[in-house]
Length: 194
Image (cartoon, rainbow, N blue to C red):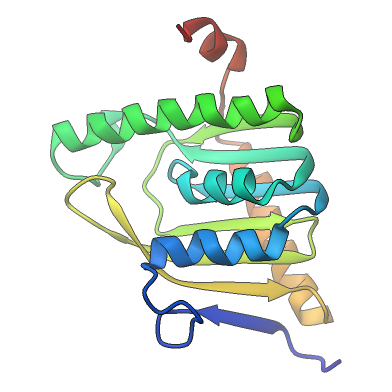
């Protein structure tokens, strides 16, 4: 194997399923990568984690420890989406997704779940799988719900020193962000369910 990082670029021009939107490509690519596998540790940075949730649920993979860093549902600090009713829709969607993430823990697909909020807008999303794979992409801010559009997506496999270093840098970013994030009380979320 070469000393260079391995990148896989997923886009509609070279995807086997050109009819997929980028959002669908993200889910399709993730499901094919993680289907029925077992991971010790998964780290995710996302706005609300919709695409990652769908991929993990549909792939039926098993995860020992899942760390999620999600955008705080705080209208005052959200730049995108612009209008308040879209921001409220994003908050409602995030709250529903948190319940769904928790259901993965209840079902046993995820053994340990840690959800924390960051309170700023991001143009980056990523998922690290056992510090061996990095699935990442950029987000383009949108005025309407959901507030961002998924741009081209990349997968990196840690098969070289350079790739391991880059994946390690992303993982350290999670640890750094956890110093300024707010933990979510999952017991409170469960108590609110009808």
